[in-house]
Image (tube, rainbow, N blue to C red; front, side, top):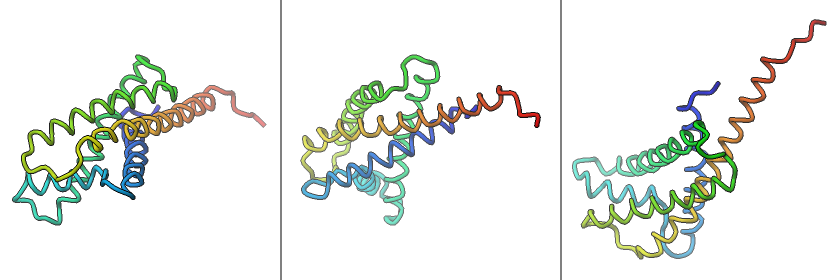
Length: 163
């Protein structure tokens, strides 16, 4: 009933938003873990022709874009019934996504010679819990979508009241 693009966008926004909030809360004391901020800094360095006021937008678009990429994989796995959409499976997806996120950030900072000054080990370690948060909230969003679809199917298939 609901197409996979919409499912992906809903799951992506739910997961990425809560993940970003979690990273911001983890940044209150100590190291800054906010992904859009780091992506913004990288954008300033990688795209020197870009007006500086656009770099935060690039950071946010990049962050939500990656969330959409992860969510697209999740939705494809759920829709094809390769895996179920339980919270346990979502947590496992989050662990795998955390590993992938760790590898992406590590490669990015290795390739980018002007990467921001930070404690990389703490940043990489933080990838795991926030990706679990992302995946759990993407899973919760998907579960709500499936409940909505099931309810609509029941409504379509139930005989209407003739009174």
